[in-house]
Image 1 (spheres, helix red, strand yellow):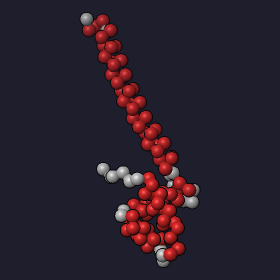
Image 2 (image 1 turned 180 degrees about the vertical axis):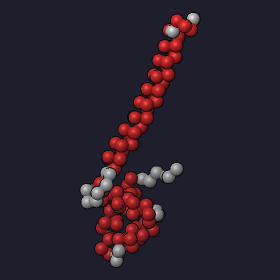
Image 3 (image 1 turned 90 degrees about the vertical axis):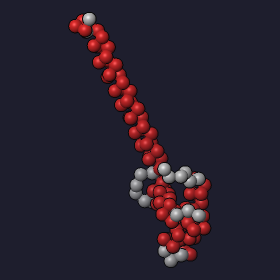
Image 4 (image 1 turned 60 degrees about the vertical axis):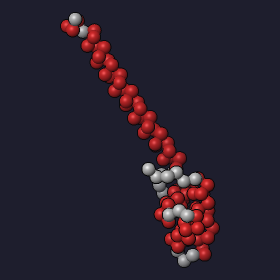
Length: 103
């Protein structure tokens, strides 16, 4: 399971890459430098930067808020399906109890 990274660290990394990108020949070089400075992987910083661009609307994709909503709704659907299965099995059980042929 991936470890939980502090939101402030993510925001700081994204801010540093954006502020200092012009000082490096490529965005990858800026990302690598910030990752090394903050002690996280370059790929993590790259993904955080891409997600920040999606959240800002400068890049197409699913925003963090939409992703959280989708996750919440999937969880709710799973719970409701489990509840429906329990009710279906209970109705089958009680219908069998009321059947006069079972007495």
